[in-house]
Image 1 (cartoon, one colour):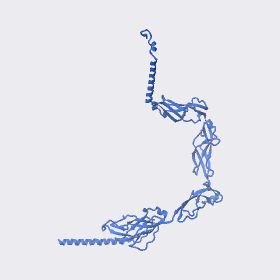
Image 2 (image 1 turned 30 degrees about the vertical axis):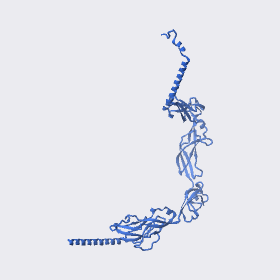
Image 3 (image 1 turned 60 degrees about the vertical axis):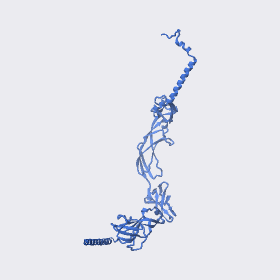
Image 4 (image 1 turned 90 degrees about the horizontal axis):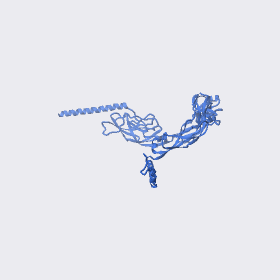
Length: 500
C-alpha cells in the first residue's frame, strides 16, 4: 500500500505546508507549560532537600600488611541532595567514607581520593575534602633490650635492692621512621606505699635520644610483671610535741597531737639503738583562746642523726583548747515527777513545776537540753498524809546545782479509794537518776541536817528509809479500819432485825 494522496503526492510531503509558525509556537509553548507543571507538581509532592553529615571518619581499605599510614586523617563532611523520598531509607549509618589506596605501591607521599559508599539512590552525594595528602611508611618490628628505671626519690628511706622483670627484651613495632627514632625501651617501677618486697605489673614505653616518648610505636609485651626487693634503712621513732605557755584565763588545753606521730631517722647504729623518741620545737600557747595548729621542726637530735622521712623534717602540732569559764543559768518551769508510789495510793505534788539555778562552763550550758534535767520526788516509805520533801535534781556532767525555787515540794499521799479528784502519780517503774549524774534530795519529814551544795555524780537523801516499819504500821491501821466497818455493819443488821 502506498502512502499517497488523491492528487498523487505523499501526505508527509504536504505536512510542512500545513504547519505555519503560529502552530509551532503553540506546540512549543504547550510543551514548556506541561514540563513546568510536571516539575512544580513533583516539587510539591516530593521536594528536593539537602542533608549534611558532618564529622565523618575516613576508613583506610586495601592497604598492604607491610604498609602503614602515618598521617592522621581529617574528618569529612558528606552532602546529600535529592528528592525527599530518597531519604526515607537513607541515614548516617548507611553512609561510609573511605580512602582509595589502589594507587599506593610503596612508602612515600600520596594524594588519594576520598570516596563515599552509600545505598543506590538518585540523590547527588559529594564529600569534602575530596582528596587528602598522606604519608605511607613501611611497617617494621625490632627487638630491643628492656631498661628498668627506679622512680623512687633519693630521699625515700626505703632501699631498693634487686629488680627482676619477667622479660629482658621487648618487640617494638610501627612505622620504620618511628622505630628508627627509638633509642631505648624503659620500664618505670614505683614503690608506692610498699614497705616489703613485692611483685607488680608495670607498663614499658619507648623513648628517643632526648628522652621523649615515641607514641607511634607499639611495645610488646604491653605489661611486664616485675619483682622488687625492698630493704628499709633508718629507724622509726615517736614524736613528742613540746608545749609552752599558759592559755588565757577561763581556757585550758584539752588535747595535743602531732602529725605524723612518728618519723624515720638515720644515723650511727649505736645511737639509733638507744633513740626512742624525738621532740618538736616548742609551740607557745600563751594567751590562747582557741585551738592552735602549727608546723614546726624537730629539735635536740643526737649528733649524727638526721630525719629522712618526712623529707623536710617538719611535723604539724595541734593543740585543742576549751572554754572552762563558769557561767550561771536559771531554768524555769521544770516538771516535778514522783517515784516509788505504793500500789493503791496516789501522790499529789504542789507546786507541779519548779525553777533551779545551775552553773557550769559556757559551752556545756549551751549544749544542755531540757531532756538532760530531771526533778524527782521519791515517796518510798512515806505514810499517807502530807509531806515536805526536797527533790532530787539530776543534771548532766559538768553542770552543778546551786539552788531551787521552792526548796521543798509538798507531797500528799492518799489511798486511791479516798481521793475524789485525779492526782498526779508516776509509774512505780519510774527509773531513778542515771548513775554518774549529779542529784540532790532531802525530806523535811525526816530531816537530819541542813542541805549542802550538790557536786557532780553524787546523790544526797535527807529522810531515813523505814520501809519495813511503815509497812507494818500501815497494815495495822488498815486492819483496825476494816474491823470498825465490820462492827458497824453487824450493829446495823441487828437493828434492822429488831424492827421486824
